[in-house]
Amino acid sequence: MKWDAAENRRCKKRPWRTKRKCVKASQSLARVMNNYLNNQQPLYMNKIVVAIDGYSSCGKSTTAKIVAKELHYAYIDTGAMYRTVTLYFLEHYIDLTNPRKISQALQDIHITFERNSRTQRNEVFLNGLNVEDEIRKMYISNKVSEVSVIPEVRHCLVRQQQKMGKKRGVVMDGRDIGTTVFPDAEVKVFMTADIYTRAKRRQQELLEKGEMVALNEIMENLQKRDLIDSTRKESPLVQAADAKLLDTSYITIDEQVDFVLGMVAAKIFQREFSESDKC
Ligand code: DC
Image 1 (cartoon, rainbow, N blue to C red):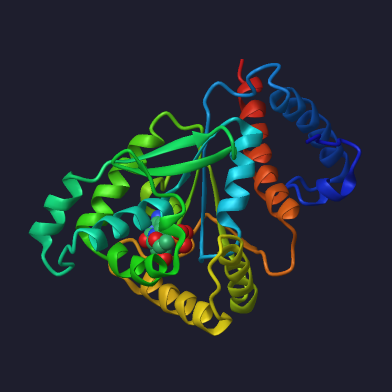
Image 2 (cartoon, rainbow, N blue to C red):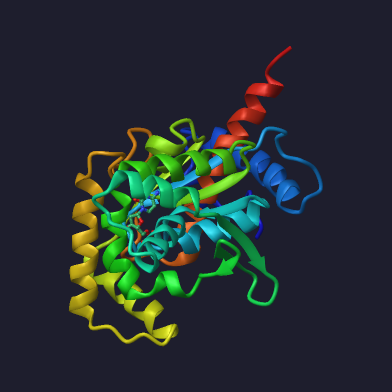
């Protein structure tokens, strides 16, 4: 990936107003970003947190993975963590109305992410067992929102996520990253898309994994999850006041990635400038 200083289309998206300022900013940005992306020098010693929240199947994970790779940051899929807990609860017949049993069960759940060198994917492990494919299945999607409303589950996972991002340098996607997990994230994006586009994307994903599900069943599942996720008491799915909205209905993955990287670049550039302005 290369940042092109001469490309005015990109400049227009930047928050600098006059053309002269815009070009000047863009050249610095290109220099700084290219050095950084080529790993020639650390762009900024203090790494940042990139929070990508929004509805299911808007392209959050795909975007977050690419952004993390470009920045040499860690990528954390928090939805996978809620799915893994759901899998454990189902396998162990945990009564979702019994807080004591839930707290006990949570102590026995150990979630880790490991990079698969063959697929180059970050895969999720439950107590040492790879559950990456299992947690994406429809029976988990049908139950996960019910599990994610449980306060004990949320407290436990939010704590783990905060630990994972303590040193910053992470791209995290989910529902409450910019509002609850990292309200101080330097870059916050909130993704949305129309329900039909989201359902089609989800159907394609499931098909690639060998699961054939009718479009209306997927749409119903997405709508039900949207409702539960955005109306729950504990850290509901809402756009953080300082998050930028990105509608992905009619844009490509490249454009989504560009949008987020543009925000990262602007943030880092702003910091570089304010640092170099100091005596
Ligand atoms: O991103 P996903 O579809 O894999 O997420 C699965 C579910 O997990 C989603 O319906 C809501 C829940 N979730 C959550 O409550 N908070 C998060 N930070 C991430 C996911």
